Amino acid sequence: MKEYQLSDFDYNLPSELIAQEAISPRDHSRLLVLDSANGKIAHQHFFDLPKLLRSGDVLVLNDSKVFPARLLGKKKVTGGGVEVFLHQKKSEDIWECLIGGKVKPGMEIEFSSDFFATILISQENIWQVKFNLSGDNLMKEIFRLGITPLPPYIKSTHDEEYERARYQTVYANNNKLGSVAAPTAGLHFTPELLKEITSKGVEVVTVTLHVGLGTFLPVKIENLADHKMHSEYAEISLPVIKKIIAAKKSGQRIIAVGTTACRTLESFSQDFDYQAKDEPRSFGRFTDIFIRPGYQFKIIDGLITNFHLPKSTLLMLISAFAGKEKIDLAYQEAINQRYRFFSYGDAMIIAPKLLP
Image (cartoon, rainbow, N blue to C red; front, side, top):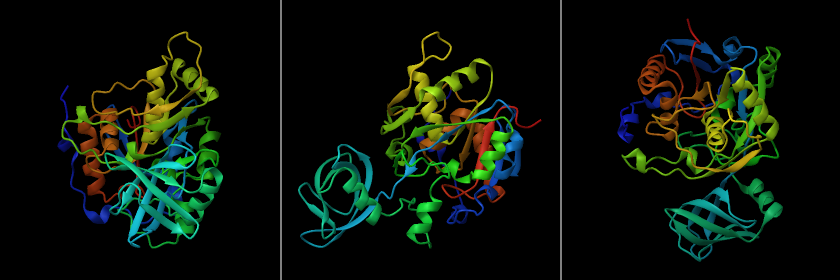
């Protein structure tokens, strides 16, 4: 099999196809149907999804909830503006962050008169930042002052209240707070659509992956074998694991909603062989799984996903699942048909035997 390089995953996208607004209602986005067995393509809408699913399928959602991870502050000494983008909690008062603005260890950043942070250390442009608050008090201030972490290519004209609601899946779990970007394939679902899907006999289950740098940081090296993913926390409860194992053993389809749900399931497969007689256990750990062409999928049979950025690990993942040539053709077809791309854009479903 060909060993692909970073440049193999580049493509030209007209800038006007980068979605700036989310579709309303959510399920009225377009849906490109890609049959990964024969390469055939069809054009539908997301509300048509129940027609493509069948009784016995297991639909796997990522229930992680996005929090307002962007904090705008100023340097205590000079007053210069600084953006602190929260990534991952290291302790009750220390976070890993990306920093917008020139900083150095020991510098204090003020967000309000009684909320500030001290810059600690940096490794590969990821800083550790210590806040003067901790635990629930810190999260309260983050929710009071933080801004929804929309991708930089979205120039929103809406207020913060709107974006907090819209850049969030309808099934996000309040007890699973931890994502700094939405699992965007899930943004197309409505409660009514999920009800229609379950009424058809589809089992809907949830896993958790807190979306962080591993999902959205760009790849910077041409040789993909040398790329190291940042780790993200993923978990699957024991009841869900048992349902997935039973479905796999009985030949039912596992359909992941989004690359994050896919990476969670495939990370679990690294720890547990569902065909073995070992007693299953709950799954919860940090994962840095990097799925690219050549990877052999062990759990998922289908994937619902958005249209991804050039040279992204997400584009590499779907190329691994469907075959790069089929994805290249599907993306060109999406461009020709004026689909909307990226986080607020349209969706596609990839699985074998979707189309005659």
